[in-house]
Image 1 (tube, one colour):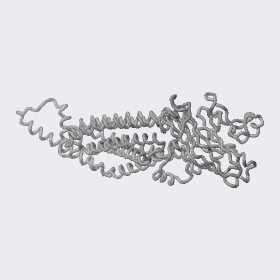
Image 2 (spheres, rainbow, N blue to C red):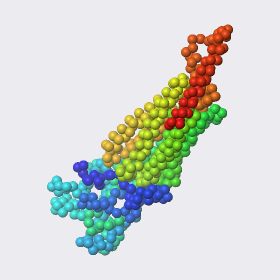
Image 3 (cartoon, helix red, strand yellow):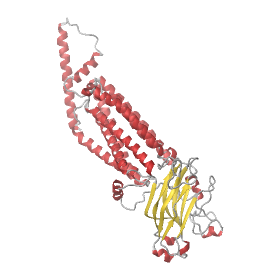
Image 4 (cartoon, rainbow, N blue to C red):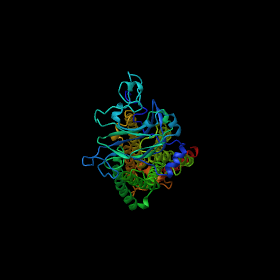
Length: 533
């Protein structure tokens, strides 16, 4: 990059936690985590080149509405967009006073810039290595003041970047940045860094908080559309629920165990969408994520996805349709489901209960990879099982069941193909958006997965909706399988057997006996296969 060091210019906000992962995870569960309110509690600076840097936040902000106040205040209303500094204090160690050549001129600066202006930060003398802090060579050229951050006015907005400074007085160990608000007049991805250049301040820590607000509330720009989306999805689940539950009540005597599981998934989906909507609404009003609502929204969503995967898997195996039990596979299915739930719950809690900005890429990869592998394992197992089940249905000529399973297989295949295509797009999107410049479109990525899963649920609900013929899809060893086979055989019979033919009755009885024997043999074969699996 031709501008400032990529390690400094608008990276994702890393979790400012210096303890272990377990401590952080427990902290997420039992404490309130700031969101658009970025808190700094004893945070230390990191050396970057010739500067010492602390990333204070990174969020997409929309410009204040024309009718909003020119200067945002602590009680700013709708339409105002700003970044407010509250009770920011810097504490230096005692030894820094002794090591500093001029204790009265020790400076700490806060710099706010829009991501498109990142190249205005930093500079170099005679084309040498780029520096964040003003070097003696640059100071001699009159380009900057030694010991301060190098920056140039933005071409789009000459008043930016915004730079705030605080100086330690005498031998004071604490310096306070006056509380103030920076109004946002231009839509963009904004980044805040605290920087000092004097090595004598090594060990400096910061305390306080900054508040980031959009015109419509405290939701970050890339998350703001999600509140309306979850409201829409709540309504969509209600409509699906009304259709499903009306059918369920109407044909409750014909309900299959599979349909009870689909009812559970729809109920979980309704709860999940409603909780996410209220979570975002509360977040938008206060700037803080309501941890209780967030936890339950994440948990209901994870339970829904786990139950959905398990249902699709056992249906693909033919459970309740061509086999009465899963045999030795039951424990394996339960173990896979439990592992998926645990991995997904941890990932979702860390992503949604942490800071607003993305956490470190390596940490996220560590959590995403197990979930991705489990998803792939589910998909492979599902399609392998579907292939075997379709073969069984075709061999037995169970036309009705074969038809619904083919539609089910087609729906799953389309879902997988679309998912793979979207994953490729998502990788392309993120690889070309290193500095989050496309933050206004980032909300589409999580929305797509919600819409896709809801669409698949609607297809499954339509295929297995409760009806007066529901029981024809259920497994039965009392002759119903024989009935289905006779229906299919009747399609190829040349014509009815005459009642006057003395051989007709005996021939029909022989055919029924043969079919019965075939069904019994097939049933015993399924049991033996279950044992082998």
